[in-house]
Image (cartoon, rainbow, N blue to C red; front, side, top):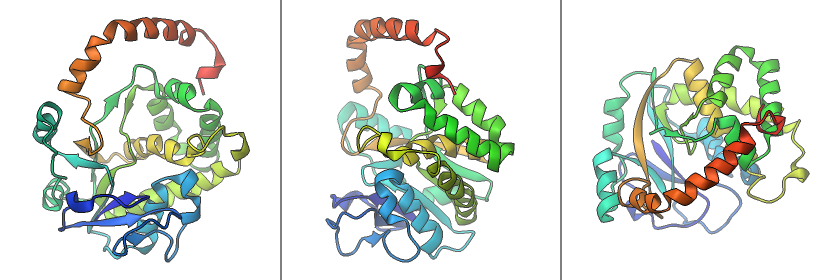
Amino acid sequence: MIYVITHKEFDDSIVPSDGYKVLHVGSNKNCKEYYLRDDTGDNISSLNPYYCELTGLYWIWKNSEESPEDLVGLVHYRRYFATKRSNLRYAYFGELPKPLEYGQMKTVIKDADTVILPERSRNIYSLETAYAINHNIEDLRILRKAIEDNCPEYLKEFDQVFKGHYFYGYNMMVCRKCVLDSYCEWLFPLMKTVENGIDMDQKSDSYQRRIYGFLSERLLQVWVLHNQYKIRTFEVFNTEERTDIGAVKLLKKIKSYDLKVKRIIRNDILNSQNKKYHI
């Protein structure tokens, strides 16, 4: 089953009837009656403001009925996997793609050593520097220490990922249920350890309090690399905006001169030895 994570009612006519179910997360009561909810059974739904879609992932881990060999996945109410061809048509002509069919995913994942992730994107800066710019670098230092203390065998991949420039976003993954269970068994105890070191009162707003969702987006790549899973990628389309290719990319090029100036200024800062930007 592919679970479509949402925190509100939405136009779910795009959700395929075969192999997909909507899972509502968090305490918002604005929810259709037929949605699954992450505040039932064994759950951490109350932590949704900090864990984002991870409260849905936790619910799937603890409560879903798939067998270990069944296919299971997580997408969003506005973000779905799609083929490159359909994404190109979306970018150039505005033709909304159909989410990747459950049967197509089963064809790709023929065994338990394969996972589907979003097409990776390349950052201008390393992931640690990008995190420092957008969030608080101290979060990563606490996370690295937690890995060093609890699963030091992952440190090599952790450093590799955060020194690198590539990123699989959105906490979206499709795999066998036994693989998802293994990931959750590693991820959630680690997040609990990080919780003990984070002062949430120091987070400036509700966006910055979504720290565990931000961290896990990066950690998924660490876990997949360490465990040497085969990665198959598909592009992701957003129902609320055009894809960042084709027509949209052309519009961004019009502003390229302004972007170059900003990057020169930013790089002057980042090329210093200022510890602020490094783990």
